[in-house]
Each structure stands twice: as C-alpha cells, then as structure tokens.
Amino acid sequence: MKTDFRHSIIRLGVAALLCLCTTGEVEAKVKLPALIGDGMVLQREQPVRVWGSADAGETVEVKFVRVKAAKGVQPISLPTACKGSKLQKQYTVTANAEGQWSLTLPPLKAGGPYRLQVNDQVIDEILIGDVWLCSGQSNMELPVRRVTDLFADEVAAYENTQIRHIIIPKVYDFHAPQSDIRPTAWKPLTQENVMEFSALGYFFAKEMFGRNGGVPIGLINASWGGTPVEAWISEEGLKPFPQYLNEKRIYEDDAYCRKIKEVEGQNFYRWNRALYMADAGLHEATPWYAPAYDDTAWQKVEMFSTAWGNNGLNPIGGSHWLRKTVEVPAAWEGREATIRLGCIVDADSVYVNGTFVGTTGYQYPPRIYRIPAGVLKSGQNVVTVRIISNGGQPGFVPEKPYKIICGSEEVSLEGGWKYRLGAPMPKAPDMMFFCYKPVCLYNAMIAPLASWTVKGVIWYQGESNVARRNEYAPLLSAMIADWRKSFGNEELPFYIIELADFLHPSDTGGRQAWAELRRQQARVAEENRATRLVRNSDLGEWNDIHPLDKKTLGQRVVECIMESDNK
Image (cartoon, rainbow, N blue to C red; front, side, top):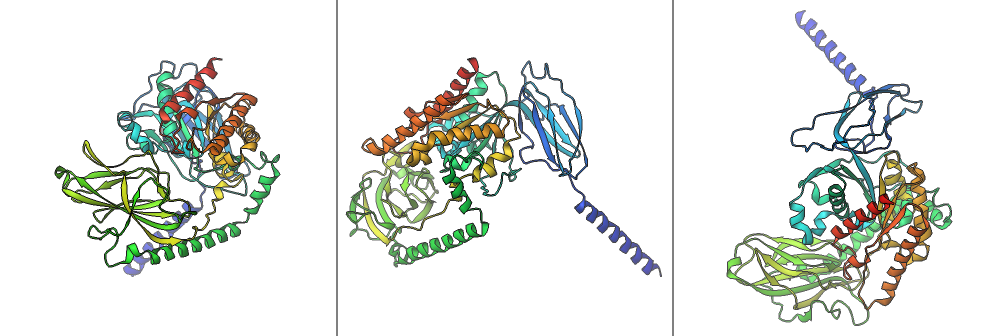
C-alpha cells in the first residue's frame, strides 16, 4: 500500500514537471534581433530604436541604465559622457497584433557602459558612440590577418575595447526583405578578435578614435567578396533597371536553385574525381612529392614564365607539378620555419621534404604555410607544389614573396624549377554564385539593419562591375537613394572608396576599363548630396586586386569625413 502511494506521488510529480516543461515550451518569450546584443554600440546624439517581438498584446518592460564598467573593460572617460541626456530609465510598450514592438530612446551623448534589460533579458557593455556601416565586396571584407605582412607589429601592439565590430552573416534571399539576420555578435578590438576585423574598418576606427576625442566606434561589416552593386539594391530601388529585376525573378524558385547546386555538385565531383584518378603524381609507386623521387627527366622552367602550363596557344587545365631543391643552413635543421609562396593561380598543395604543409583553394590569399619542426634538414631540401588550374593560365604571381624563413634568415625560392604536367583536364565546371544576383543581399543583409541608427556608410565596391562600367553610376546612385529611404535618413552620408590601381601596365585595355569605373564613381560623388569620393587609386598593386595598404586608406576616409563635418 505504501509502495503504491509512493508510486502515485512520483507519477503526480512527473506529471507536474511535464506540465511545467510544456508550459515553458509554449510560453512566448520576448525576442530581440541579432543586432541587439552584448557589446553593441548605439549612435550618439540621435534617437535610437529598440525593437523585437512578443505575444500579441504582451507588455514589454525596457530598462536602460548607466552601469559601472566590468572588470578589465576600459571605462569611458569623456567629460561630456552623459551631460545633456534626458534619459528615461524605464519604458513600457505593448506588442501589436502581429507581435511586434518598438520604442525609441532619446539622443544620448557618447559614453558608457550601459545595460539594457528587456523583461528578463539583459544586454551588457553597451556603448554610445558613432556607428558606421561598412559594406561592399572583398576589399571591404578583407580581414586584418590578410594585411599582416605590412602591419603585424602595429596590430599586435594595439587593443581598444571601445572599438567594436560585428560581422553580418553572409546570407542571400530572393523573396522579400528580411526582418532579422542570423546569430552573430559584437566583438571588441582585442588581440583575440582583431584578425577577423575588416582591415579597412580597423585602420579607419583606430584613426577616428584617436582624432575624435575617444568617442566609441561601432563597425557593422556587411560585405561579401565578388558581389556586384545590383545585389545590394532592393526590388523597389531596381525598378528603373528591369533587366535586373527579370534576372532576380529567375531565382525566386527555391527548388530550382537547389537543383542548380545539386547538378553543380555532381559536375565538380566528377571533374575532381577524374583529375585525381588521372594524376600520376599521386599514384606512382614513388609519389612526385616524395624527396626520393627522381625528377631528372622533368622540364626545367622559369617559375614566372607563361611558357609552361599551356600547349603553345591555350592554357591547360588540371594539375601541374613543380619541384625545387634548395640548400638550407645547418643551423635550421630540426627548427620550425615558414614557407612563403606569394599567390598562385588557381589552387595549390605544398610539400616540403615529402611533408604536406598547406593548401589554398583559390588564387587571391597569400600562401603562408608553417613548416613543422623536424622537417627541414641541413643541406638539400625539396619543395614540391601541385597546382590545380581551373582552365586559365596556371602560375605564380610575380613580385610576391617566395622564400623559406627561419628566424631572421631566409632562403629564396625564385628562379628555376622542375616542371611536369600531372593530369590535363578540360575547363572546370562553372559555379553559380547566387549572392551575385540582384536584390538578394539587400533583402538578407541590409534590410534587417534598417532600424539601426548609423552615422554613415563606407562603401568599397565596384571591381565586379567593371565589365558593365557604363551603367555603374546610375546603379550606385539608385543604391544610395534606396538605402537612405530604408534607413529613414535622406541625408545619410556615403563615403565611396575609389577603386585601387590594378593590372599590369601592358594591359592598356583593362586599365582603361578600371579608370572608367573610377570616373563613374567620381560622377556619383558629384551628383549626389552628402556623398564623397575617397582617393585610393594610388594605393593599388598591379598584381593584387586586394592591395595591402588599408592603413593609409583608413586615414583618408577619416580625413574625408572630417572635411565634410567641418563644411
């Protein structure tokens, strides 16, 4: 009897617990957009919106208060941090019939940290400062880690938790403007986070912070490499360009897009499988990357020559093998080292004395690979590079570093190499980049930001529109008007980064095309109010579409902004 009673009590307890769990699951919780999170920066001296979702008719209580800086966080010491701010510390708002709610905080002076509490959710380490939307393609996206050849010491010596950076996740949508982005986070400028900061954004923020009295800075990085301007314009904004709207409609069918990617995956699988199976360098008894392999019969080539990797008229796709024997000092034996192989067209796998040390899948990133301790030996060492060409001329990009570095010493890898064709292949299958199509990035990466108050926009884009340069000025002007409408600010400042110089001096046609795109950019700056062009052409590198000197460029953006503010 006692046992039955005890079992009944247990069953009732379990049932009650299940009820509580079920109630918790169905009970709606106030939801905040991904932009609203710990460490966020709100725009100073302008009304700022806070918004979210809840049950229809639910009461949402919002508290916004100044708090003491957390341990290890640099406090804001601006003398005007809170003066003149009429801060109401508590607000109450009711969600509408669609479950949406919003409120507007009054303008605040620069300072912090603040805490935002929305019902039971707490957002900490909020700063009030200047918020900049940094957008465009790869030269805006390019992270700090890619420019350390020039700035490693400077980057390593600087931290500033009053500079914050948030990366908007790369997503596209062909259907409608989205209300939120995927989860992401604001990151302070610390050694832990700095390498993923936009390099241009980093140097801009560092310079602006120093010249603007220590006002906190927030960088919203909404950029995606290779994307054309029309991808960043709304459907409404593209109405004067029906060709692009018609192109967008092709991809509104999700099933069709999935099918494209499915077939594309099959094509790449078959191409790569055929390449692998046909490449003797991987399948002979002694692989071609082995130090003991006999390469005496291989062709001798100059590494930067275009004579190898083609049939005398057309380039050869597929795998190309190159080997070089180099002498290293006896003191290097057993020590860790670094191998630098500039940039390579298109992909590469690198071996040192038969040990695989690194691979890169496309041409632009610098090849910087670690050679583990114990791989190098006194005397002769063999470096092997397997290059994969997608169908264009394979090769090493000139005027880049090609060497092995150990401590303060280095051994050059330039000059003659041994060469042998691995597996000739037809051109690699084409790849569909949906993110290059009209409207899709506006819908997924800009529309969700439109409720955020920003100081201005820094725009670095245009490389992908050079082939259609004659229409760039009207497209970019349409985008500027479109974003100003979306953000509810007809005077939202735009700072357009001029395209950097690019292409070999002998490529007169290509250079003329780039120069014309720059003229189109200048035209936009002249014809649109509150829009400025930032000089950048002289900072280019003929052999790299991603020039490294983002520091000088960041300083020029600051100069341009300050000149505009003083007018």
